[in-house]
Length: 330
Image 1 (cartoon, rainbow, N blue to C red):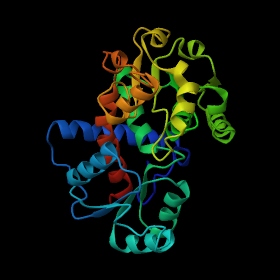
Image 2 (image 1 turned 135 degrees about the vertical axis):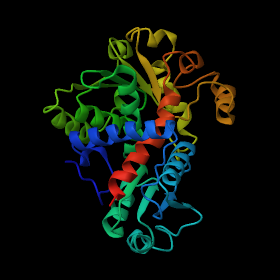
Image 3 (image 1 turned 90 degrees about the vertical axis):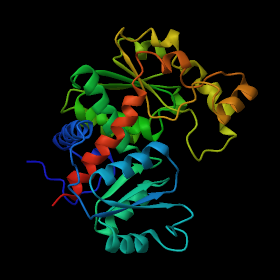
Image 4 (image 1 turned 120 degrees about the horizontal axis):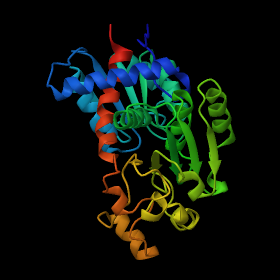
């Protein structure tokens, strides 16, 4: 029997196949309950803190609504509302919050920070994103994939873009854990770190997953079931990086031509937000400076029948609800 009570969710490699499988199955049950408007307030009266060094629409909304559905109270702390790591050490903050709250979500820059929160707070801590990984996102991704195909093992998942980022790291490890074949496609200087690749390949030995990297987008997408991309410059990175990153990644854009290499029934996925049109200030700025109407994915793919981006977005709420319930239930 799977028992995750009191356990923190900091990175995918900390969890076994069976535990990840349990969380996905539990999320499916909560999704049905939500659709049927069934009472889900199993954690009534509990209190959680949401710490956001980096802002986010989906992560904040998913945690808040999931918590309210479970009957919990929520305190939101952004970078200006907390002294975390500024006037007060992470260790001291963790010890204080652990006395007040039953669980803590952290979304920020440092993986070490979320690890220290878990170490010193004494309550479950959930990683809403760090520079190293994004584990709550990939739980939703794999739920979405399984909903569409009916299975996970043996699927071919391709990530195209900056393969050093938190999404790529987590997708690679999650694929290895769940028996999904994973290919990251990027110029060599943007490849996933050797440490992450080696750890993923070690896990893959027991699941049969194939983990590889390539610079050739046609080779990567040939036979892909799932095509995944992400923004080319992450939150917090300097604006000066745009030109260099665009020049490196312009040939890795997901568009009609590149997507045609994938299987006919392939799906497109993205963690969001996405620069697929000119309807954002950043999108307009990029167009004015570089002449690009879209960056990592074109609008015709983003809005096509292949796109599952909004299914992913909704599923963040269901997987986060499952995660909080599993780690906090009596």
